[in-house]
Amino acid sequence: MDSYIPISQPSIGARERELVLDAVDSGWVSSIGKYIDEFEAAFARYCGTEFALAVSNGTTGLHLALVTLGLGPGDEVIIPDLTFVATANAVAYTGASPVLADIDPDTLCMDPASVESLVTERTRVIMPVHLYGHPADMDALAAIAKPRGIAVIEDAAEAHGAEYKGRRVGGLSQCGVFSFYGNKVVTTGEGGMLTTNDRAFYQRAKRLRDHAMSPERRYFHDERGYNYRMTNLQAALGVAQMERIDDFLKGRDEIMAWYRSAIPSSETVRLNRVKNWAASAFWMVCLEVDGFNEARREAFMGKLKQRGIDSRPYFCTMSSMPMYQQKPLPVAARKAQSGLNLPCFVGLSKKDVERIGGVVNELLADVDQR
Ligand SMILES: Cc1ncc(COP(=O)(O)O)c(C=O)c1O
Image (tube, rainbow, N blue to C red; front, side, top):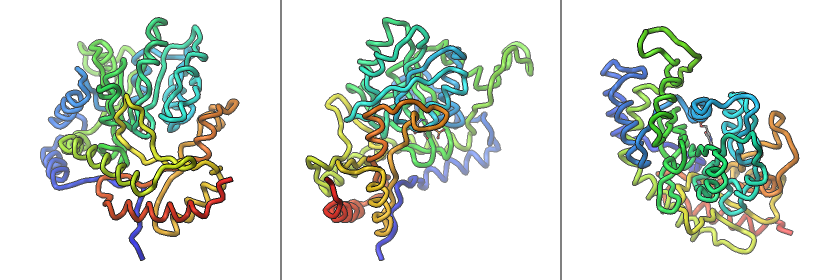
């Protein structure tokens, strides 16, 4: 029996162990310590931003970015309909309303034309998501946002190292927000990072992250802040991972190339599409098959599982959930009901990908694609 191939698994090596143990032994186990400073500096350098602020996870990072801008009830934030629920939840935590935009069928990121049609006088933020590692069309979004004084915040939770027109995500807007959950390109177990070039924004976010304690008077707080800090132990893991990020991304590129030869694209079967202005981080391998609906996709994933191959469906749309329910948006709805992700992680071998491709091709030959 072939071994089971999970959808994702972290790459934690000797260097990660060494630095985490060093952090443990140092006694600096909470949110003060040299690894926090080193991780923030390494991440800012990598994204080409002036500042980076480590936080407890990507969700708190998104919330922090929005409260730093002073978002509240009555404000609107445009987000894509197809994303992980944290994007919408972070908006809702502030009291502002998430407004759902449809997506581009190739990039799976928010469609600027849909965004433009949703702008009102209450729109304060446009929040693209670089979904599955592919960057959103940032210039088109900036062209909508800038003349109207609307801020752009990138949800870059899934796209460490992805590039838009040769520039890394996270530095393409007011603020980028990353996640370091265990299945991400870089992990700290749980964790997140804000990136920005705006000093005032950075300082305000840092203050709010740390309970908004007065710099003049200890334990006095003149407004309500949060404890959204990362620990030094997590940051130690992050420093070791950042030493390897170039290799991680090269590895993902290679895996994607193996997939492309193992599963030939056709009129009806597609893997990740990448725009000529983009370099994807390939966080997830995306498989789309014309003729799939929810039931056929579920059956297909069940058969993959029987053959020892893990997979996952695309995210559900926000508009399909009770908290954000509204009329379905056509492209997002179609993708959410038919797309799926195949395993992609550093450590996946060419042989593994060939095995996955063989099974996928065999099962697709059987699928009724009418
Ligand atoms: C698009 C997106 N936004 C936000 C998050 C939230 O990050 P976290 O899980 O670190 O809270 C995630 C993922 O986990 C995500 O995929």
